[in-house]
Amino acid sequence: MTTDKGLAFGREQFLFTPLSRKVRGILLIKIAVLILGFFSVLIFSLSATSEPLQGSKPNDLQSVSSKASRDRQTLVLSSRNWTITTDLEVPEYITLKLEEGACLTIPAPHRLTINGKFLAPIARICFGDGAIVFNNTSQTVYPQWWGAKGDGYTDDTYAIQKAIDAGANIYVPEGVYILGKITTKTYYLENCILTLHSNLSIAGSGEQSILKLANHMLDNRNDNQSNAHMMGGGNLSDVSIRKIKFDMNGSNNLTPAGKIRNAMALRIAGGENVNIEHCLFYNCAGHNVLALGVGPNAKNRGARIIGNIFKNGGRYVGTPKEDINNPDFSFVYVEWEHAVIQDNTIEQEDINIALHNYTRGVEIHGSHAKLLNNKIIGCDPAVYIATAPAPIENVEVRNNSMHNCARGISFFLTKTPLKNVIISSNVILLNQSTLRTTAGECVGIQVANGAQRTFSSAYANAGPIIGLKITNNDIASNLRRNDKYRGIGMVIHSVHDTEITQNRIVG
Amino acid sequence: MTGGGITFIGSPWGSINVDITENTIFDCGEGVQSGEYGTGIFFAHDGYSILPPQRYYAKNIRITDNSIGNTKENGPEYSGAVFRNLPTTKIENLYVGSNKFVNVTSGLSGGNKTLTNLESLNPKAHYVP
Image 1 (cartoon, rainbow over the protein chains, first blue to last red):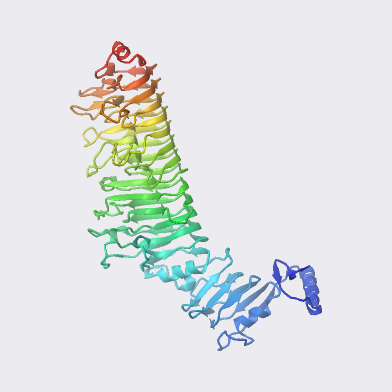
Image 2 (cartoon, helix red, strand yellow):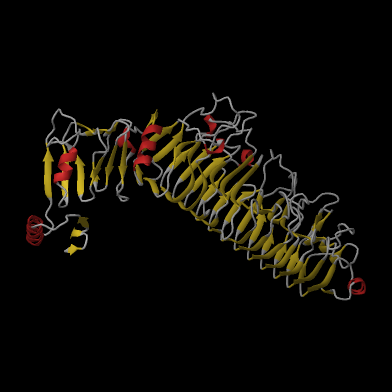
């Protein structure tokens, strides 16, 4: 097929202007090959030499790539080191295959761009400080290519970050990957270990693909605003993280006295379309486990947090060693609009320690949020709906179970309005800690119009809560007769256009 | 529930157009101590009477078709008030009706216990036990 720009062949288009007889001849031959062999694959095999891959030598990668540019072909690199000493781009129609023992060395500032398929053993194949970029978004990229061990001892920060920098589709095979090198950013809250980018997928095999925070990450830092978020980024779009276990190693990263400590699993400042699905988050000594905050020049919308397991965080980090300097904690903190938080299990395994301080399950600060079918255990409160930093509306909390929580659903209004909230078909079972230091009654549904628990003119000067439907919820308690604070089914505070119907507050 | 069932507070802008209907509220107040209430629905609309004028002011409140029982106040056994501090002077157009009470000593408790008081203090309010 010819076009006004040249010759199009298959899915690729090459420019040959003017169209020569020679090219036409080649075209005819290719069509014949296609018809007879029906997409036969031509394989070029390249033998190793001691010479580097540069210039125009006939056996270097660049030269062979060029020669192979007229059909889908597999370019096989045999067992040796292939050094790239110039910027090189491998076309989309070439499959680059590294045999066992082959590797690529790319010194800075050079870049190898691979637009097609790339096949290589899951072992170290990439060396040098130059860049390798996989533009094929379906290309799976392995941290092992940069030397990740996953042995529970070696610091794999470098390898995993290189994989993230190189591709869009990262797979973390089974193993325990230690993360221990912080990248310091301009703003201290953005300090993190792994820096994410847009259009990125990171996936693993589930419980056996473990990213583990190294021990004592901030002990030797002198500033009091340090952070060691495991993953971070700003203004990110289309990011997916699936089937990764985040071991936040909280008992070996306790918050030092007097320091602001935010060792979160993931913190994103602005963005859209972030999916976090079927991950596991254990023992986080940070301020939050997941935090999706608003950022400048970002849409700040579209988070899907689905099917994850969160266990322990805040004061209780999975061992009797308490994080006593971490008094204010939330597992999930979302400021974005259109967040769907569904089918997650959020659990504090020792409620006596956990409920010593505030320990929120899901903290919603964005409009059009849906919290559906989550199981939340041992929190105070399980769900926190807050208007800071902006007004919010259309929040749905439905079909969740909240067991052994000091509070089920609570509101926090800070000078901005809240409209249209549906709280329906939730099961709330109250409990509390004998160690509890946070004051106030245990409440199933607490529609407070102000700070934390009651009205506060300093916060709630934006008017009443408008459009509240509390229907078909079950509220009960495991509280004991002599507990310090009583348990109350609901506290309803300054509401307009509200229905409280068919709820059961029993026992 | 060791405390009360529902605590309904009016402040600071008042609660307007609120339906509390068809709820089941039982076994409240097991843990209450002296001076505390295990009331089915506790009203807290008696706040400031100073500016802003709408403070603690409510209207169009319907409390109907609820089933409330085994409430407890100050004593060893259940049997306390279903509604406490029902604020007839703080709510305009209050309708309380068709509620079912089980094992309670009185439908109302507080300053305005009787239907007569309710109607005389606020002609728009109705209490139908």
